[in-house]
Image (spheres, rainbow, N blue to C red):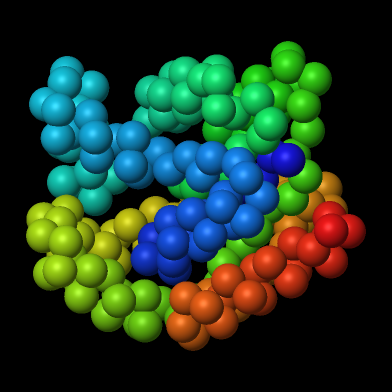
Length: 191
């Protein structure tokens, strides 16, 4: 099973990805977590990523694709995976399509979490405080939302046209959202 989860920053993708991954027995792969690990380890890649993120930007497609492809080649992905945070642009969709096609794979579904943006900003400011994430301040976060809509909204259209899109309301408790997500996936996938 090969899935994507999408939605604006702070919509709960990481939390839901972990629940979905556990439910289906596949790894939930977060580009954000991969990037944060590189930053923590102070690698050359990590320093480059830190600079981009601190300015409220997104890591370039070529660099992100390199990181994702390396991760998808690991042993635990043989039975499937769920990508969280990738693709974010039409260019990344094309690159992922080519990568999947090269391995004879297709996507099964694309989960899109929807959420009220003011509620997301409030949620992210609380998370930034609790998790001590200096890259999550209100100005930077609102910039990320703007960039998200400009670059990522077109992906929802692409995946909708392909019949892969599963839209789910991302507001509510973790349990409420995960129940909606799993029910929508079961309906889409027939199990």
